[in-house]
View (spheres, rainbow, N blue to C red):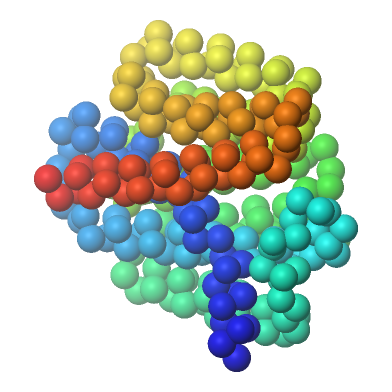
Length: 269
């Protein structure tokens, strides 16, 4: 049983919560620079934990639905369900119980619009990864994966701060396109990634012109992706395993600690 629990926990890819923490930090900077009094810091931390845990469950679901494909991919042999085989019923039970606990906690303690946004995260991921729709295998994949998820993560923090559009709509669009570009690079599709990057750059120039993002917020929004994106781009030409591993460490581990420190500072100091 301990082996099953360990494998299930590994499948949640807890270090990948850096994506959620990054988007929460971006939303919090808008509260910070607008001198908005944050009266519910503990609720925001709770929301961060709930969203991060929810994505852990959704990553487990992704690994379950990708199991057949991952077994044939030499780059994914360290995935939890490949290293240790677990009966499908245990995985599904773990995912359902975990998501249920998250939503019960959210409904009982947080705003209903926060719960609705989490429900949209689940819906998007189901459409993205679960057959028979499984948008992951279609041309719509870049539009429904990281791009949509980044926007929903920002929105989940914004509603806890009391205003969905505390983060300007133009910044939502920018993060959508920037995240899409990162996804395309990760998938090794350089031509489309370059096109999306041009669009994202144009939106960024517009956002800067409007003054709806400052340099610190810009750094939070794009610097982690750039740092991780460089080795991902180099992986197209160099050793892909080494470059992908470096990108994972930079984005999912080093950046995670930095984001958390910044969030705690904004909330409590």
